[in-house]
Length: 140
Image (tube, rainbow, N blue to C red; front, side):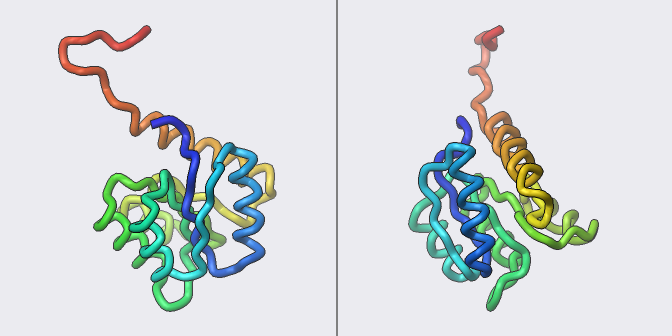
C-alpha cells in the first residue's frame, strides 16, 4: 500500500483536530473524516474503511485504548497511529500491545509532529507492501 490518502482523525478537541488535519493535508491526505468520541470513530471506521486512523487516548464516553481494541478486533489490518499528549511508558506499551503502529506526541512542536506522522506513514506503507510471490525475485 502506498502512503495513505485518507484518514479518520479522532480527538475530542476541535482545535487539535484542525491542527492535525492541516498537517495531514501537508502530507498528502486528501480526505479526513473527523470524530470527537469513540462511538462515532467506530461508526466512521466501519462506514469508510480509512487508510489510517489517528486516535487520541483521552476521549469522552469510551477511552482511546478501548476504541483501539475495538478497531483492531473489527478491522485488524487498519493501521492506527496514536496521537496523544500522554507519554507514559505504560500507555505507549499498552497501545503497542493493542496493535497501534505508531505513537505521536501531539504537544511536540508542529514541525516534529509533521515529521513523526510522515515517518509513521512511511513505516505503514513499507509494512503493508505485498511481498513478491513465491519463486519470483524482488525488484532490485
